[in-house]
Image (tube, rainbow, N blue to C red):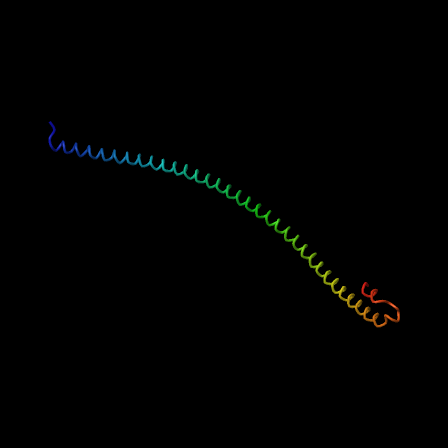
Length: 136
């Protein structure tokens, strides 16, 4: 039979062998875990990059649509503003024309009244009756 010292030595050798085996297995396991993490990270980053690119395309498309929509509305507003400016220019000219016509009418009325007054004074000289003066 083996002696106690021999058993202790065998036990120590087995412990050392087991420790080495565990360390080697740990290294292999950790290396595999690191490789798996790297592969997963690569897959995840690729998916993230793809999602970001897709979102960028959607965002740029939406920005372009929004720009076109606003651009068209701005063009419509510009056209309407130009129409309003033309309308107000025409309206101002019409108002000025009406003002001038009213002034001319007042001047003519004043002149007619003056002529009537003068004709009343000289009405007997020309033999014009009152009725003719009021109808004129």
